[in-house]
Amino acid sequence: MHTYDIAISFAGEDREIAEKLANSIVLKGFNVFYDDYEKANLWGKNLYDHLIKIYRDEAKYCLILISNNYAKKLWTNHERRAAQTRAIKENCEYILPLKLDDTDIDGILDTVGYIEYNHTKFEEIINLIEEKIQKFNEDHGIDYSIIELATVLKDAFPEFTAADATTKCPTCETYQSLTETKLQLDNGDTLYICKNGCQPIIVISRPEIVAWPGRGYRIGNFVIRNASDILIQTNEMKNPFKILARKAALMKAKPNDK
Image (tube, rainbow, N blue to C red; front, side, top):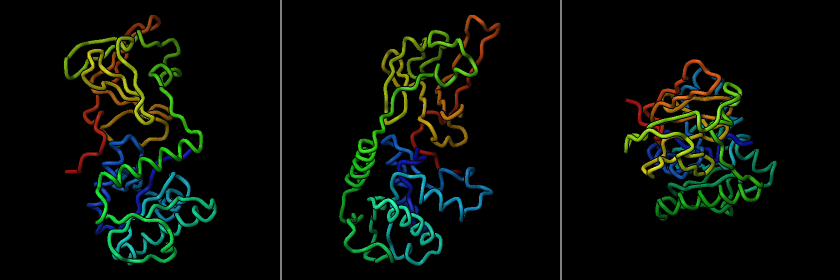
């Protein structure tokens, strides 16, 4: 299973564009490798080996922001070579070139289809990326299904059912059992929607998604993101168990560091 739907390779000088793209792709419900999302995860790692693995093995696509700055950088060429290894090995459309200027990059032929950033509407670029990822999922039989909280907590609370959990909607402030909420799938994330339709109140993120600090709790291969405290009380429990709310639980994109 790929950890990321798409990995973005870019020069530091083009970070503003890269971040805008990353945030917009995340809003579509996809998992993006963008270095600023993973500062804690990257801290202390051998970046040479780790980035090879990400750009060669762990994404469905690699989005390369081609520019004069990109051509000059050692690390970007390192990332590009890793991506090219994957593209050649699998003989697939793995690299998605997005040209920020007229620079040519070694190893990326003029015959490879590309998009020109300055001549394409931003929304169209995001929609094209969404189409590519969805087509990849269809071609590879990837069908994300609803994952309920009971599935995530089955090891810790084997007897737990949706009727054993209550939470509050931050909008209407109504307390409700999970049996009263509406379940919805959003690009691999399971949403528990307030019974009054106000907003998602719990999100179960799909396997391998990265949870930045303050956003959610990793339990096994899943991440629970709850806007209000979840109170769990089964018949076998003497005292209730509380999953505390996280401030950034429902944010789609990571807030800028202060």
